[in-house]
Length: 357
Image 1 (cartoon, rainbow, N blue to C red):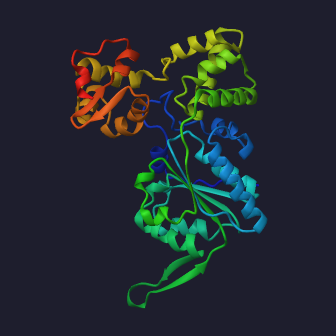
Image 2: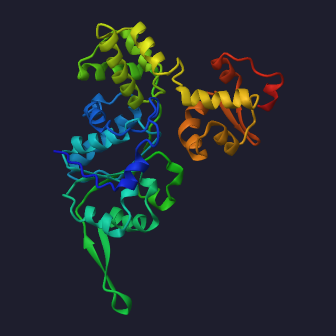
Image 3: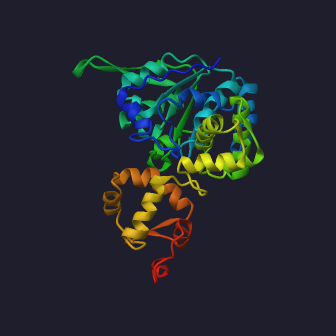
């Protein structure tokens, strides 16, 4: 049976969870959502929607490892938050029939932290490290011999009398998850035998996820209501499940408990999530560039000051979806709103604006 162990200090918790005001459309997990998130995760590869090339390959690798009685090669899962990296780590452990031990990069501050995990792993265990790109260099270098040779170098003593001994480790599979694959060092990346990138979901696959989650939660939902939620979920299962939960509350309090297209649309309007999946924070950024700066270009620091946000938050949290949807564009002179972005806001593009692209 899979087990979890997550010794996060308070600083690490703050890093991994949504900071500041919770956002309905944020793909990161919010405080208090952990239990809901776990309850709606698929338990088998066959239940995992989308990412079919990933699940098909993993299915073959897992079956081959099981038949040979060997641990699965180390697995790297990359992609934006909320797409199922943690779910896949749990599924890998479940399909292999081995324990899962879980932690996160920011929680591993000293060599002793990583040693306490590695030396207590049961043979064949899956060791899941979320946000693995945030490991410090000393911890990362400790992982190299552990991943390659199942050995852990330990320094005994100090000064001239110090000596290094190597502890034998049980066979294990490291599953690393990252939202910033470009920040991984080449030596660490090269030690993963299996590497996959998860992509955003389309509305059809998200509708299937919403239907499944509704069954688990005991929510009555019509196909039109399913589509209304899926189409505004930013290609992300976690956002879809969060919207479903909030729309369910709206349906129970103000309607007969059944989620129809009309009920979903009214609930999402109340939640300030528009037809494109943008919330008021996204629209504030679009509005600032389009109206305050006449469509741009505008520099990141200037934009951050205009919307009262940190530049890193805009770049890491808000911009990826706006860029993916083609609502804004980065240019050498700064951010600009595209014609599609103006159309989404119901505004005409300024004269001569197309010359910026």
